[in-house]
Image (cartoon, rainbow, N blue to C red; front, side):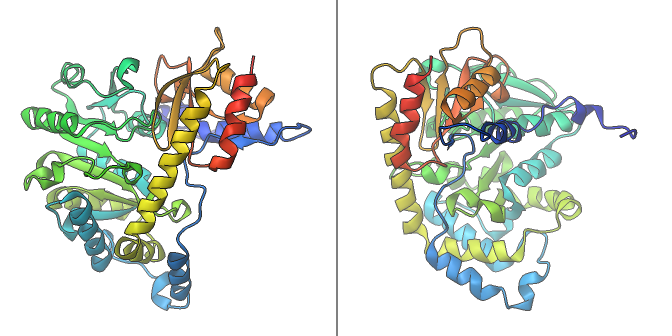
Length: 390
């Protein structure tokens, strides 16, 4: 290849899951232990049967193959708005929603609408690696808020406030965290929103795993403020919620003014979310609340089994933080980077994990374990392999 490549993309690391999957492909030649995938954070269960049956009825409809409005079909966005009103007590309408190709594209829309090259975004560490990669490609400076292992990484409002500069456009936070699983408390989110109000910046919340928080109360009350759209931008992956990851079911939720501007990028980037995906999530939003709740309980039980097995004697790994989908662990291999430790775990134990340094500088001593892609019956064996590593 002789044509130039953007220096901003050239300096970004290769996608870490793709890197680990390449190691896994090499492992499968002549090894004895079957691989256990603790790498990719996707649900291991299929969509609801009722949803699959419904989607099958749409394939013969010629409209299924057509474009929709850039932001999505009105009745789909209204079904989702109704779900947010039901789940969050939210003050919002269909006009606050733009349907996207997964949460990743919603993130790109948010950042392209908020920022230009040279701006600052405050990023809570450990971060979701795709976020940092995307900001780097856009030439946006990342200011990293520190991780406190003593409290599982709950953001410090004081530490974040000290990072704000005249060039800061947003605070970026994932809750529940990917990779730690830590849920940011509602009171902390309220304080961060107020901090954004004071500095006229945006609080960008990626709540991809919010439907896996087993609680009677909503994750926060920010949407109950009629003026929430002044400083809040919300990203969501309905692919995780409804086990439709391959259908790329995401959304961006913001003020109608923000959505109007974001649609300029939407139109040039993807035009619209596929109509089949839109119809699927409308059906799901209207019919599958109890199904989602049952899966939340299942993932909570899976997490409890994981923690119980992890605490058995002989385990040299340290569980620093965890939640329904993730375990954030400190590995015992002194002198090894996270990549070296992750490679060792594949080679010697047949375990796929992600190295800590892909989630931020200074995390070479950590690994991320995903609980989404492994049934509870395999968890004891997976943790037993950890205990046997030397």
